[in-house]
Image (tube, rainbow, N blue to C red; front, side, top):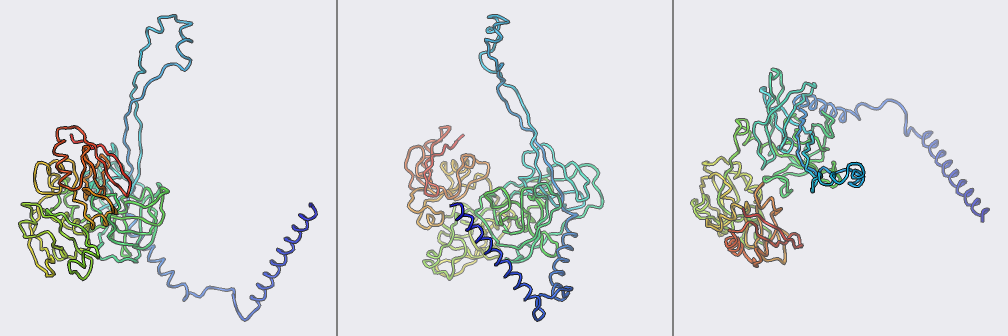
Length: 502
């Protein structure tokens, strides 16, 4: 048996030797052929395009990097923990101190106050000579100290000027004597960027400041990611990792077209899909943030849903685009303008409406009091209506007409609709029956309970829910309670959720 093993080993060795020898002969023959694989200098004409692209990257990086900063944050987390007794036990000490030791001991372990410093890091971009820096809200959220480090290593303490959690945007300002030579970024037009365009991301991934990565725009108008209340992300394959948040995504002119914010990954690091907030979404709210004020948003007062191919066919539309109005709230701007259920909004203020998210973002970005033109398709014909946008408030975020029950939904921070076959298909809730959540306000009781858009409420306070009216009725009856038990359907699974009413 041992001889057989040895023979096999020798045979394998001889085979490998023959294979290598044959490869060497082939290589020698190829090199001795008619000029193939000649050694010598590389033809510059062949590499010139690559060199030119490299020079373009280097020029853009050199232009933008001085405007990019690293944002260091720190917060102190306080907590209590029990202070336990001796690991030797009471009997050990009782031998020396007697029974009085037992009498002097507290019955319950004492609570001791502890605190721990948590440090974070992100990126940002200088936007003016006064030392204002644009970054992500989640980079500076709930922190006690902020420091900004420039590209040349100069470091300054900073303070928050204002934030907008719904878009994950924040403006901070360097404290003290701000250098007069601060470079500022130049904003581009994120609407003009196209899928496939070259882009560059700059930031401090994993703490490595001034890191440059390149890629392309992979997609536009990404929503439903579940990160922000208002989403219209640019998707890129330029490497974005923890620490990049708040840094710029720039085009090949060195103009900022996005704020790097998130990655889609299951491993905690870049996996080819990164998201940036389009800069055009930020431009409209930036003057308000620079003043230290809170952002106000516009509202039409309608419930809208996506236009599916089936709906487009039934409504006589040539394509599945726009936003279908399913409900018009009484006394709302839309009602006063003459908008009716069944209208399909195809243009808003001169811009094409691609989807419900697109319309929602455009309306939200409109200053309250502004008049806007709505182009709707009604009974197969286009009509133009003029609507005066009003301020969106938490009380106006709920679905339905104003009523006591509608007020309950408002206070809970969620909007609902009766689940229809089209909505069931849109939210992946086929086979369910109830009230589907179409919107959840950040920080609201509904949000804190873990409710999400697309959840279908099938029971409320042990009562069956088959429509939005059923839900309103059940919540209205339970308004004197502190909590209410909901049964929801989420992606085919049933979940019980405790919702705090007070």
